[in-house]
Structure formats: C-alpha cells, structure tokens
Length: 218
Image (tube, rainbow, N blue to C red; front, side, top):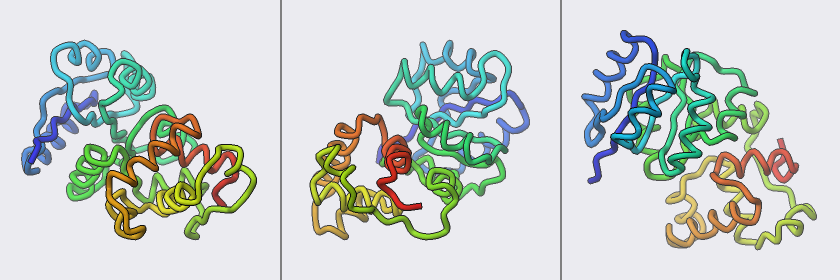
C-alpha cells in the first residue's frame, strides 16, 4: 500500500506537535513537511512535495486562504485539508470552491483525521457533514437532482445525471459504481465528463456550481 506523504502548516508549535503525534500512529501515513505559515510552506515545497497538506487558516506571512490559491496554482495535484476552528458556511464553501479538498475542525477525532487524509488521497475530496451542509446551504434533507433544462444547457446524459445525484448524496466513487453496477473506472469517467462539461476543477466545484445553477434542490 502506498504511503501517503503529509505536509503540516500551522503557526502554533503545540498544535503541530499534537498533530505530529497523531500522524505517527497512522499506518501508511507519514509527515514529510512542516511549515509555520504559507510563505514558509511555498519555500519548503521547492524541496519536497507532499500528497496531502493539512493547512491552518489564520497565520501571518500568508494565511491559509492565500496559501490554498497559490499551492493549487503551482501544484494542482497536491490535496489540501483545511484544519481550523472556523465553521462559517460561507468560509467553508469559498475554500472548497478555490481548491480545498476537505475541511476539518481542530477538535476532530484522530479517526476522522485519518479517514479524511485517506479519502482526499484516493478520491480527491472529503465531504463530512460540516462541508456538505455548507455546500448545500444547511439543508437537512437528502438532495435530489431536478430534471430541468439546465441539464440540456450542459448536455448531460441520463447516466451523468445519476452520477451527479449520487455525488450530491455523499456516495464515494466505489459506492456509486456498486449502486449503478458499473466499474470504478467508468464512474471516474462520468465524473470527469461532468467536471469538463460544467467547467469546474474538482468535485467540490461541481457541487457548488450545481447548487448555484439550482440543479440540486436545497
């Protein structure tokens, strides 16, 4: 099994030490980069590029928002999990829109942190309840896709509509494949087609655009 390489960016030494001790207990996950702010991160990325970066928001010398934009511009394949105490819906939605792959509060459990790292490494994004509620405007009901002329606008096929619906309902690629009796590779192809047709860069962007276009009922 591939070892997931982690970067940790936070300006509080004590917090970094705590996260490092948690990562040490996670199988097939290892810390390869440590930085105190966004500027420090960009310098160190010249020497080592992790698979996943755990990124704080509030830091001097380039904060988490600025660092997310810059990292995604320079290293689009690097995954970013925001790790902060802020849980405002608009902030979460905005950060996912500009490229974050996951969003966790600093009081999260070790189990969820490990799960989030594995999810973004394997499936690009981690949608926990916090993120899902923010992206779908705090709805408590399961989202459902509405059959509107907007689908014709993006030339979506019936199968792509089904995949979009299941993504909105927080199913993983593997789970979608099982539900539709298709291969994982086929679902990945449908997901890529959806992102290409709707002109977005990742699944978070896909969900945000679907909500904005009222393709998802919330």
